[in-house]
Length: 322
Ligand code: DGY
Image 1 (cartoon, rainbow, N blue to C red):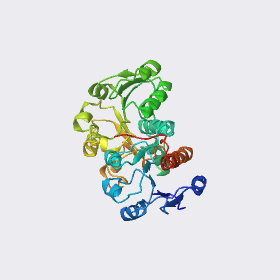
Image 2: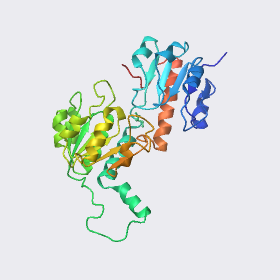
Image 3: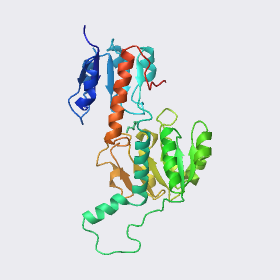
Image 4: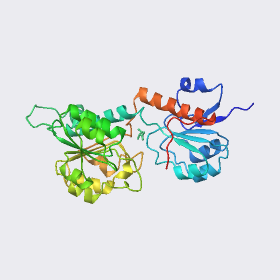
């Protein structure tokens, strides 16, 4: 009997696929760093029962209409704004993501970015490598303290809470804004719920961990940056489109805010020519929030497990709904 087909849109380690090869015909785009071209994705998914995709692929109605066997789309990310989940539901296709397994790793990166930005770690590293270090000086590359400051977390989901847990170790006061209040986080982490505006005006560090939706699209805009302290440091580990990048550039250039640490961008990959890349008070990373070897392996395993379950008529471990 013909085995069900799973298509994987990026080259992943063979040993993660092996356990599934007796039951499935696993096919894969052969490049690890280059995304699959749209026409190849369409062609390969046409016959597939399961699709393991990346956040860089647009998974939409056109693809569902062209893929009559498709039963499950498994996104290698916790965010799934690249997938038209409503259309998937109409076509009886299950969509899954990778929550939980990446929570701590992404929070680690968020905190690393916050610390690197506040203490100008990248600039300081370049300072030595560019042979600029001639003398020690009291205010040489002086940054901002982190300990005992106020962190404002926008989006108090699993990752937001994990960032807050790290902040408690630094003696920080924690403000959060979320669609719903989080009594557990308030009790266990001493986090205080505030309005979005209050968080913007009160926080020393504003961290975006909010999922990208119609409501959160460009919530960090000119008006939002104008409300922040001039010493504020803005960190984004959610999605680039939660930010109006032109407004952020303006806020950074005019020193309306002090600095920004960004792991995500409106357009990815962002060009080295982008105005954000020309600023000293910005630390930029190429969307590596969950990129530890251990976590990426767990994410791939979870995706394959979800696909295998759905094709076998079982309930997915981590389905999403619109
Ligand atoms: C996610 O999982 O949504 C992250 O952005 C990937 O690093």
